[in-house]
Length: 97
Image 1: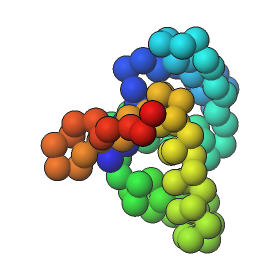
Image 2 (image 1 turned 60 degrees about the vertical axis):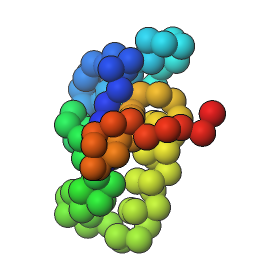
Image 3 (image 1 turned 120 degrees about the vertical axis):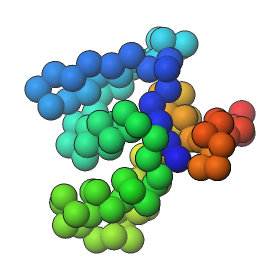
């Protein structure tokens, strides 16, 4: 399960999201499918739920979509703006740092 981190401040401007990690001051801009995924992460979502929503909305190849979503989520987790949680407990999973 993935969910937005509390250390991520964000705002939406014309369909794009501007994010800032308040822990390290880094910032990011998301548009298109990235914005759709960020919006979905308002509440915990599984990777499969995200892939299903993107495939249904954009009619893209499922295998390619799954690869792209996984890579995007990994970047968000590495940037500490998204937390990967255990599906069983909702607790954050340990990160390899």
